[in-house]
Image (cartoon, rainbow, N blue to C red; front, side):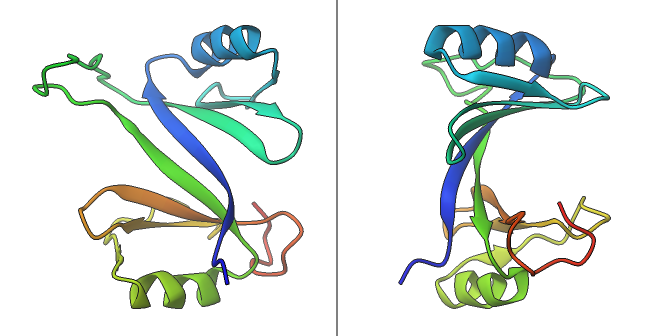
Length: 132
């Protein structure tokens, strides 16, 4: 049984609006930009999304070299953050010491190789009283 659903890759960038508009037009997906411009996403329907987050001091990847590696992580929706946390910890993830979500709408973990990923409370799930 799956622990999570609706994966969303999140790309670091200097300006989320610019990348959302670019990829939205490229793919013909809808564009949604938050009020402060720190986060944007493009979606096809309710489950296929790519997100973009502003990163201070952003440095573009130096591909194929790895001096500045490619920068993205995976977000997945879960119905219950506590249950999903227990499950991913059993599977070998570790909870990152830094948790930036003050409202508790998501939690940051590291996969077994150290890559960050986020468990995000689904809008329909009852996992978080304050919503996401």
